Length: 130
Image 1 (spheres, rainbow, N blue to C red):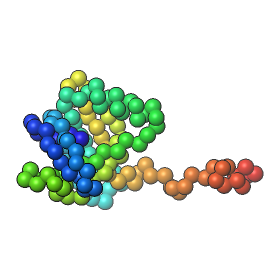
Image 2 (cartoon, rainbow, N blue to C red):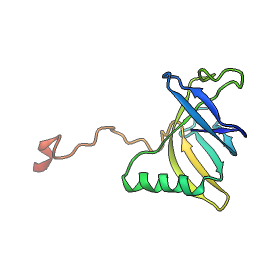
Image 3 (spheres, rainbow, N blue to C red):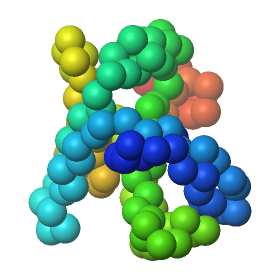
């Protein structure tokens, strides 16, 4: 958990977990709320290149979906997020010498698989005979 500040903070999440948010330099460009197919968030974090790259490489090796949760807090009230958290799927990352840039999407209609169920010979045995 990271916070854009000079000091670490103890925060409470929406599910009442208490976490320590580590201070770091970061820049967040939130997506527009509109009806386009993909709403992207660009998230730049300073001085975490090796840790972030190692976690992303590990997730890619294990073929996991990398989730990013964006929570906004009031600086006067860290007991709960000020708004409903936004949950993103990470689409790409770029590690540069001084920072990591992560691109994540909020609602990825363009890359959504339709139909959502993947039919294989295991869950639809009749496919063996086609």
